[in-house]
Structure formats: C-alpha cells, structure tokens
Length: 214
Ligand code: 3PG
Image 1 (cartoon, rainbow, N blue to C red):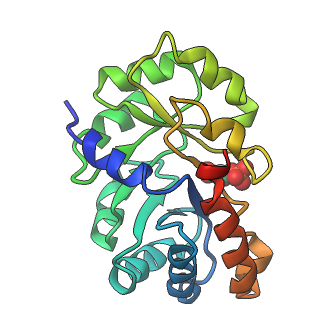
Image 2 (image 1 turned 120 degrees about the vertical axis):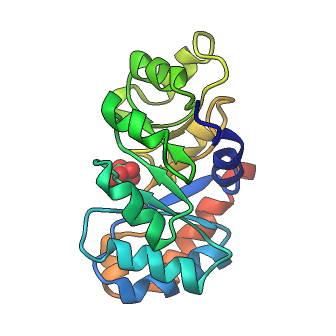
C-alpha cells in the first residue's frame, strides 16, 4: 500500500491554494516561487506541459527550498523519475488510469492522483491514495459533487482544481473534505510573460487570505 498520506497531507494543508503554473521560461521560476512564498502560498504545481517545466522545478527546488514544488500533469510513468530527479516534492496527475496508479504507488515521493468520478476515487482509495485532485472540478460537478460524496467516501480529502478562481474558491474551501484548491488564476499567463510579479503578489496574497475569509 502507498504510505504517503501523512506527508502529502503535510504539503496540501500548508496553504488554501496551490497555484497551477505552466511555465514557458524557466528563468522566471525563481522570482515566481519567491513571490508566491512571500505572499503566503508556499506550494506550487508546475505542470509538465512545456519544455521548460523540468528546469523550472529544478531551479525552484534548488534556489527556493522553503517552497514546496510539485510536478503536475504527470501522464506517463516515465515522467516519475524525471520529476523526482528534478527535485519535485510531490506528484499530481489530472486523471489516473489504473496502470499509472499502480506505477505511482512505487514513486519515492508523495502523490496526489487525479479523479473526477466516485468510482475513480474508490479505485484510488483501494490502492492507498486518499488525498486526490478532483479535476476538472467545476465541469465535473463542483462543490455540489464534493458535498455529495462526503457521506459515501469518508476519509478521502480532495484538492479541487479546474474552473476555480478567487470568486468561487471559498465555496469549496468551506467543505470538510476539501484540503485546498488549485488553479491558474493566481499566475495569469500574461502576468508571467511580462514578469509582472506585482500582479502575481497581489493575487497570491488575496488567495492566501481565503482560508480565513472562507
Ligand atoms: C490544472 O491542470 O489543474 C488546470 O489546468 C487548472 O485549471 P484552471 O485553469 O481552470 O485553474
């Protein structure tokens, strides 16, 4: 059985929001991580959707060790060792076919696998994963889905991601089976492109205040 639950919990409960970042230029990643950390968001998911992703994970892991850098959009087992070598602290997947789930059980770092249905959540729980990304959250039933599964799926906590923003995040965070939420709204692509860290700092500070606001 996977034995990573206590440590994944340590990470996903550090802050109410995990910024999900698709980075085009790894050189910006250190300033980005420092900005998010200082604003109160120490956990950052870098998606493996660009060639710069592994370099960004590595740069953050080395230069900003107080941050917790996760590797997201893991689709293939071959990516596990790549992100571990780059220094990722944990792994996130958008969805989790059974073969990938079985390979993720062998990962040397914690994993938060993705699901969007009750059956997928049950399959993952049977493999030892009970901290799950719920993706795409808004399109898959949103806060109403999470509220509905509290009774039948006790013991599973979710990080809903996909369609969440500053306006609706609190409606998710108030649910007892939500550990945190994820989203791209804190690091808009145009702000990243322009190295507009003032905007990112403001959005991150607002997001960091959500737990108390919610
Ligand atoms: C993810 O990979 O988690 C999503 O791309 C985030 O979705 P969002 O852009 O709706 O926040």
